[in-house]
Length: 124
Image (tube, rainbow, N blue to C red; front, side, top):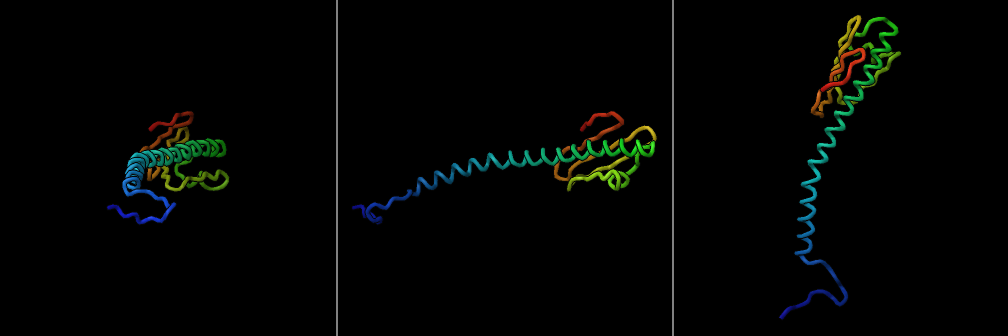
């Protein structure tokens, strides 16, 4: 004989139904976490790329004022150029009278970007 422990009109989920829902959620999470990680890496790499473009603009402004490209990040992060570098982005700047090279990467990203100028394109 089967004994019913619920009062009349009370409804609930069976253990099988709850286990099935948890299993489905587990599958969805196992798919979503790697995708989320990949999206974060791309965002970090985009921050490095964006900062690299802004550094090239600051280098050109520095060159317009001094007729030489700066050889170090300090000159273009100070006033009047005020280059702002995103948190976690590491940037190296090398310049001469006629050209410059800027290398940037994010500590949590997986790509290193290089821009040689003037008029160069970003490569990785």
